[in-house]
Length: 50
Image (cartoon, rainbow, N blue to C red; front, side, top):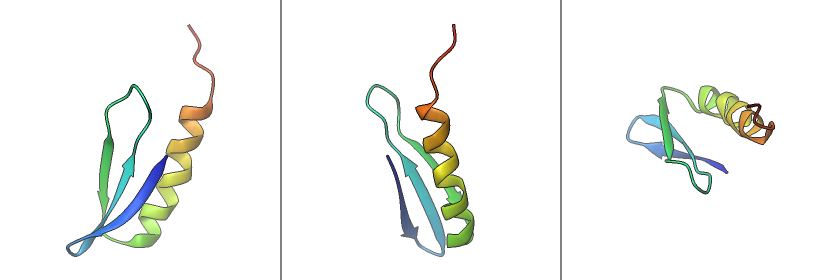
């Protein structure tokens, strides 16, 4: 699950998934943050090969 929040003058995307560390990325605009959120959630929904 990913969430976007305002952090000072920038925007943070926080991605949380059970059993994994929290991933935090900072962006200068909300549009950039909204662009990356679905990509991270999609990558995690793919099955692991190995």
